[in-house]
Length: 439
Ligand code: HEM
Image: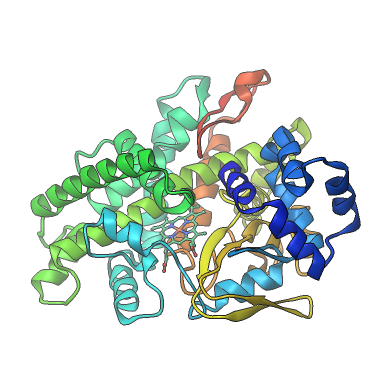
């Protein structure tokens, strides 16, 4: 969120604010603040200082009220539910930006997240569904994750670091087992995929240092995957993602050659490992901010009818998602609809699509700040929407829910009361939150 604000500050200046205000005056309170500041709008944005950096969500929510589609120069910030769905649903008009970076880290051959409406993207998505199967959810995915959570907790003391000792390891260990990446270090896998995630999804300013670290991480990951593919068993009973891919290649099915297989697995790992650990840490943090909230979460665990715990955790992710939104670029001169208005968007405009504010937009989401376990599917945008909606969306709610549910299964862990019980981030990723056994 902080980098979003930095980016937002960098695209706004007084000239563009004045030009915008001439056409459509901004809200009264905002104008008053700007008038009071000797440096105008730029000064006002800077003056928001620490508060703004800590509360970019509040700024985005305010924008939704004042300007659901705000365009300054060649950048738009889209914050209403209607406009967010409009942009994400029209993949022909609003394309993804990930292509060039994806191609760089895979050395030429892309990954389907970077591809819009074209044959290669559709084939790659379908191909990966043959390896990462919906049928596996009950038979392989759920028991594997459940077992990994229980095993990890067994080895921990009454006090431990929820992030460092537990959350960040399980998604990596799950990936290693399910994909068939034997002898891969989970810590290394997490670190590598976090760097690549930051490079592709967060780094809107194209930081050269991060670029260098990402190329190194990509090389290491490609080398490790090449090694894994070359040494994988193709015996009858080998049933990992990699083994399935190799068998299809040997059977002559197009799209599963070793380079394609490696690049697609590389993309899936970047989607899976850092996101799941971060989602679980942020959901736990939000759901246990006060003893009263913690009690509610525990009550959801105790209530065994209709799986309220997983649904509650899903709500925590809606209210505290891993990112405030996604980016798109306009492929044509076009319009975005919101609240009965049509906003003009020029070709090549970079669009920040605010999924966070959309999920809290009271014009479409009933009582958005409260936790409700009976919401319609359409209220959730935590896994995106449209062509690029998350490939892992069928397992994520289970995975994140199970990571937290296991904390109550045998024992009942709560966060430490002192500062060490706070969720600490290093850059974009959580690194620590200490918990202890409930006395
Ligand atoms: C809680 C965990 C996760 C969260 C919060 C999450 C979030 C998201 C979001 C918001 C998008 C949309 C990106 C966009 O439209 O620009 C996305 C796409 C994607 N995710 Fe996830 N994800 C998670 C887990 C996973 C897992 C487990 C996998 C792999 C198995 C995965 C693989 C992907 C892929 C491949 C895409 C691109 C899909 C496409 O372009 O068709 N993600 N994810």
